[in-house]
Length: 254
Image (cartoon, rainbow, N blue to C red; front, side):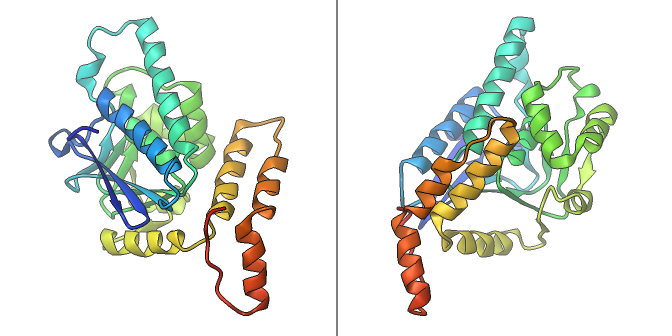
């Protein structure tokens, strides 16, 4: 990992902190690679039940990709970059455990993409969301990234945000369902949420995530492997016994 990306495991929670507060946590190539490595770490460690994404400093979650890295771009490099971003978003969206984005301040461009592929988003009252590239860089988003945003925000709001280059405030994000809570006490809200998630059945939560991911991909959807994995698991069998015995189940993720 890099100093610009902090990864900390506390109990069953793995927290990834984007740590460039002076640059509003704008992402470097190394940070994107480190995030993918963190995803691999989560998926190979059965003790991790929840992944959290945060921005350092309180002023921003992530304010996009560091613009200095776009120097010397041409069309071919632009295609490569958008493919790279799509790969990062796809990997983050496929993490086996719930991913929570705790958003304070600006969540812009690539930061909005990262937040969008998290499973649950909470934000501070001062949070602002947008992709103002129509008035800043004059670049574009891939259809893959547009699809993610439109799936959450709706086609009309996605078009509005991109074409007007405006910032969506926290209460609007709450009203349209993009975030589930606007928290004055971010640490307290986050602790309560992650504690709840960490104590739920891992395979059930994985099935929810994987099913929604496949629905987003479109036609030809198969789910037999998901259902078979969950219903054939040790967790399901022991939970049934525990329910009948009026006991609380203990989850192993197997």
